[in-house]
Image 1 (cartoon, helix red, strand yellow):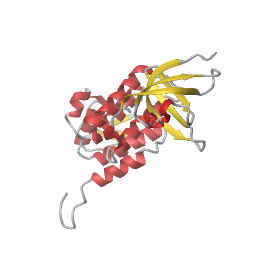
Image 2 (tube, rainbow, N blue to C red; image 1 turned 180 degrees about the vertical axis):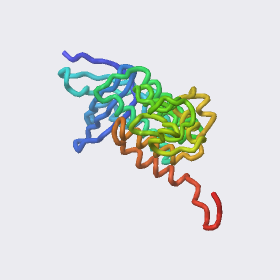
Image 3 (tube, rainbow, N blue to C red; image 1 turned 60 degrees about the vertical axis):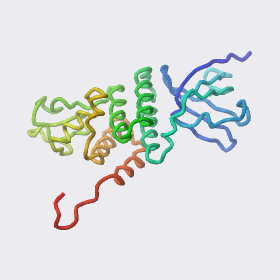
Image 4 (tube, rainbow, N blue to C red; image 1 turned 135 degrees about the vertical axis):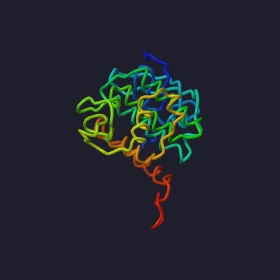
Amino acid sequence: MRHYTVSEGIVIRRSSLPSGDVVVTLMNEGGKWRAVARKGTLPGGNLGRLSLFHDVTVQYYRKNDDDLALLTQVQLNGALPRLSEPGVYPYAHLLAELADALTVDVHLGERLYDYLASGLRGLNAHHDPEHVALLYAWRLLGVAGLAPRLNACVRCGEPTGLVAFDVAGGGLTCGACCEGIGLAPEHVAELQDLVARPLTAGLRTPPHDRLMHWRLLERYVAYHVHELRSFVATLALGVEAAPPPPAPGQHA
């Protein structure tokens, strides 16, 4: 006799098989799990409800404990339509891919799910989705215990004169140690806002050199987590949005 289970979650990964079946990864307060929707078996045949970033309630069963969950019903709780726009989708995909990467062999549970859900809602509603994505990407790293140390030099502990970001060392360094990527004082302050300030306060102070911040984030994630494919699209958006270089003879 089949034992059916009902659960909610956000679709963070989706792949279509040659057979027409769809395999999805769902995340909720309990973590993430994978399921398959067989072609032609869902009521109404509506696999569109399992689109990326959708908040769904599903009914499923497993033949054996180690098998993929077999979805029998899918109810759409909420869609965030703006996430499908070309200027927003890459940011949503980055947050979902990062949340997925941070939960490989690790159970982070409710806090990471809450930040992911909040970040996706913010991308849908806020006038500056790029800022939202930068802010929430750093906060997801913080939930995983991977936030960089920004209040003092990671080499010697000096709390002042922080001038560089040491990716491998996991934080800022002072002028005496000066290990890592050099940063202007305003970039140090912006990074501290993105990583450590309360979310509402952080959203009130958008960074100026966003491409520089994306590159810092990409290098940090590649070193401390692994390389994410979604950074290609987010960096491309950053390049498009960056101001053009000054003409010869002009100052920036």
